[in-house]
Image (cartoon, rainbow, N blue to C red; front, side, top):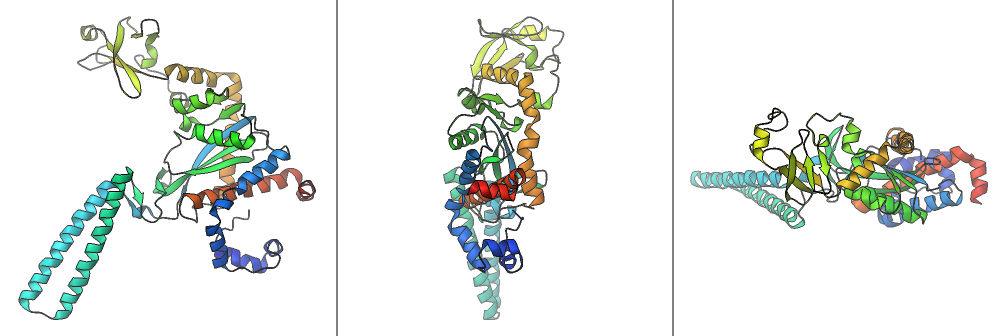
Amino acid sequence: SYGIRSSRKLERAVYHNLSFIWLTSGLKPDHKTIAEFRRKNRTSLAKVLKQCAYLCIQLNLIEGNTLFLDGSKIRANASIKNTWDKKKAQRALKHIDQRIAEILSQCDTIDEAEKADGSLVRMDESLKDQKVLKAKVQSILKELEEEKQKSLNTTDPDCTRINSLSGTHAGYNFQSVVDEKHGLILSTDVVSENNDLYQFAQQINQANELLEHKCQVACADSGYATTKELAKIDQQGILVVVPSQRQASQKKPLPFDKEQFTYDKINDCFICPNGHQLLFSSCNHKCNIYQISDKKLCFNCSHYGTCTSSKQGRKVTRIFAEEIRQKLEAQFREPRSQAIYRKRKEKVEHPFGHIKRNLQVDSFLLRGIEGVKAEASILGTCFNLVRMITIFGVSSLVSMLK
């Protein structure tokens, strides 16, 4: 709660900070004891926020009617230099093979010149080091292929390559679900994903399990706008307030964008602005593809070159869940949804601002997904405790807890 997380700083604090001295009942644990406790009790610490959330529900601080979801990227306790992908591993193997060839060539030269044995010893050591490194890189490459991973960090295998405003680094995606009433954190999670596209349903369902009932509204920004994910929550009768990427960009459609084509549901075709039909042509794993019935129509059209330059004529796509996407977009445009979305920043981004700026949490201390989930749980609990004190005051909160 004070922004002191380092085990060595905590060790010093129990000697001079009265709050810490009272909390530990005068005990003076050293930094190793604190670090080991945190490392060995990851699973239990990950449940602390759940206990805090239950307490807030009992005190009527969390209603669970409207939930706001957001994510933030936080560095892992690992360097991006230790992140390997297939290209990097292949480059390293090529360089190692060249180095081994150079060492063997130098050994032959030294043998021929009958120079001092000391050089040969050093050469043998260098050759051994290169062979060990080669075996390590080969094992990394094998693991990438077997696990079908894009990248692997040798320091923390669970973290991923994170792209953020501050650059590219090894890190995690910190997810948080916040209740509308007092802006308290209901649940947190940490995932090894560079974006939020496939997190909406999972995070809202986890929060609903804690509430033991379904929320009425689930709100997030356009980073979560994956139609299939949003549909999983919409099917439960929950109002989904999430703008599509198109709505978030606020760009007006151009004269010949797909939005200007009319879909004929009865005949399963699109009608272009000039009145020509685009019939079903093929499909892929995401959408159906529609193509102009006669490509000559496009060639003879006055808008050829603007609408399309393809020799096959104009094509448009329609995702399988197009009707759901249109429904969700229409839902977002409603006045009630707009009023809810305006509250999103002040509710769900406030905890991240406090944690990352006031508490100076710019990276996780523990390694591995279990460790960072435990840290996220502690951070969420600390935020809630401070908010509870702000709402009730210390004496009132203590009497309520009794």
